[in-house]
Length: 88
Image (cartoon, rainbow, N blue to C red; front, side, top):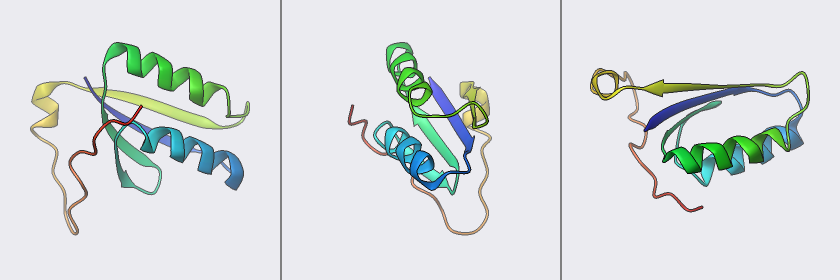
């Protein structure tokens, strides 16, 4: 499944940890946005890891993209990487 993950985390140390977790699963698109191709198991594992490092006031959102929606993604400006091999 294709997942878009966004996050809003104020503390640099926590934000870097979340970035590293997400980076190990897929492509960094923009400052606080990742697009990941994951299995159900990988999604659960990733959420557990993130939950273990964020604090109560932090925000992490997950958007599942259907195949039809993935095909309609448009970009302007510099093209971001489509995929990064999953290294879990």
